[in-house]
Image (tube, rainbow, N blue to C red; front, side, top):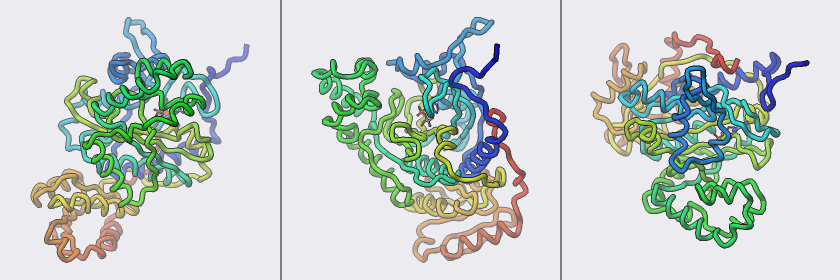
Amino acid sequence: MRLSAVKGTYDVLPDDQPRWRALLRSTAEVLGRAGVDEITTPVFEHLEVFEKSVGESADLVVQKEMYTFEDRGGRWLTLRPEFTAGVLRAYIEHGMYTWPAPVKLWSAGPAFRAENVQRGRFRQFHQVNCELIGGRSALLDAEAIALLVDTLRAAGLAGVHVKVGSVGDVDDRERYNAYLRQALAPVADELSEVSRERLRLNPLRVLDSKDARDQALLARLQRPLDLLGPEARAHFDDVVAALRRWDVPFEIDPAIVRGLDYYRFTAFEVHHAGIGAQSALGGGGRYDGLVANLGGPDVPGIGWAFGIERVLDALHGEAVALPGRQRPLAYLVPLDQEAVGEVAALARALRAEHRVEHGYVARNPGKGLRDADRAGAKVAVLRGARERADEHVVVKDLRSGAQQRLALRALAEHLRSVERSEPNPDEAPRHGPESAR
Ligand code: AMP
């Protein structure tokens, strides 16, 4: 008998390795510049971790897709079908909610789902996952989306297509579910079997249907975005404004939903013409309440994942040589509310060249400098009302203590000279996670 790989699994052969490594390197670099640190969690967890994260109305489709087994010690274990639950389990277990927020973590490795195998759909596949945990600001939602786009672009992918929507808050979601139940009740018999089951358990997920007849029935209905309450609407408008300000290409799609119960507010997907309209490269959304569901404090977050196979499938790029992990060159401190948005936009521009981090709330100079120091930055850049008045920033070299006022337009050149004068000692070559080698 010839042994072969299990159906839905495959080997990454030596020829394919450089593409994997290049993707993981460019991912590590883009996310690292934005202050996202890597975390590796186990590929299996206690079943409970996924049961709790999937939510009370336990989405049967997800449950059925999980590989769950009893080990010799009588424990029920599950191979992770996605990363978020395990990462948040670790976030809670290690008390990361006491760290400066937001805590930003990314991972890469295999995930497992007992799906029908077809092109681009495997039983063991690989994801890059990113979580920004501990902030309610719409700026964080926009940052998450921008990071997903930036990561895919850095991998060499052109033609990335982002769709953004919102499922609203708990009330909005309930209202929309009630609306769907009522609107679809008369035509329930015409829906596909999967959609009928979803209509019963979690109506919102009917919108995810790939069935053409289902989509025809849905076309006449209102979308979640049409029924948002004022809070969710304002949050959504802020996300959209930040994305426009940052020139992140996107399209508003009122029908985008994330099916699992814990998703709130922003939901997004990334598509690519090369792999067909039905399948996404990746997606994500905001989860408020998930950390609490898993037994932690009431901390909100936002995250995304993309499928490595699908990105490689869509990719025509080449391997990119990248340096390893860095300390931020600069940490931007907002001294008033208006500066919070300004430094976020400034950081985004500077991240084209350097690792740059920034504060998300207004700080006094003393606290701001402490934040910059804690971040390990070489340089702190302060921005407030006085600096705004004449388009300056205050730049403090955190090693020498020297401080100067600098015209905003001279900042990029100044940071370049700091980088040149003392190359980052941490720039050792870095490899992808063990699992993806
Ligand atoms: P999801 O967690 O379902 O939103 O999936 C995020 C991304 O992971 C998708 O957009 C796909 O790129 C990828 N993905 C999910 N399931 C599979 C699968 N069975 N095979 C390959 N890639 C997958």
